[in-house]
Image (tube, rainbow over all chains, first blue to last red; front, side, top):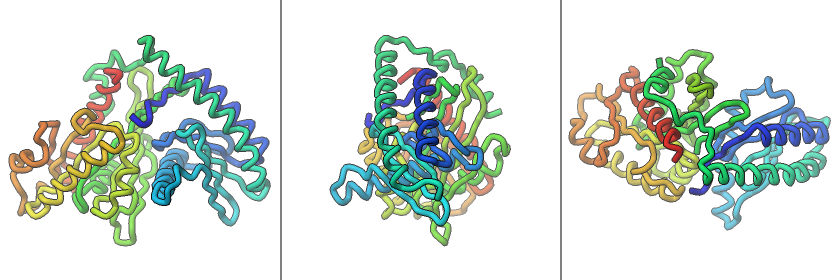
Length: 163
Length: 195
């Protein structure tokens, strides 16, 4: 399948958060989100409580999917960077490691040039971490070493969710 | 594909409501939204035209509770049903974990239902999925209307593989949660098997 299941572990989660927190400072951004291409929010930092992060993640993924569709129509593989300019706030959206979306929200305290520059560097670091993450999941899957909590679930567990 | 986060102990899954135009996909989501406790749901997003036809998708995040210490979240999406929005439908199927096919039970919509199921199958194949292998349920909607086909007739055309099926009236909510529960269950059991 095109996109294997994304599994996040503690170690990589911490590394990823460290990278985006650094990016937040260095790019003078307000908020940064990392979103799976399927629309699931992976993590975020900055003034995240001011935003409906779940909706933001879903719409970002929809946006990337739609522009990806446009790209294919004109013979491009994808548009790896999107920029939305508002009156006060702007969004810089880029694809990292082919499957994760990095969203940087910034205002006049920063600039597009600065954001682009810093995002480029952080993207490389994030790519490396996601590469390791994919490798780790594959190895765990192969060795059958899965701490997956759902192996033991019962009908009752699932019914309880809806009660 | 579902996203499992061991760091924040969360599992997110994506459910897509598919079906012909005006079959009641958005109405299904609206009913779920109305009947879900405020702390268990996020904002419902509808990218629709001025005449309330779905343009890109509807989106409703649901947090159902915990299973074995993992927060279980379902993201519900609908596709635009109108035939000419096929490019958008393909995009929304990306990363899907389970599909609900909402059929319009009215006699005159049978051709549209059949066309939509075929379209679903083809679009899934393009994304690398097989309709016969993924969690999939069928809902026969609009059972309250006068000019409807019998469930047997609908089944023959739309559910030859005998996946779980439900009669529904999405405007009153009949069958809506039963459908959602069934597909969620299939997804969780699929996860259990570890695929």
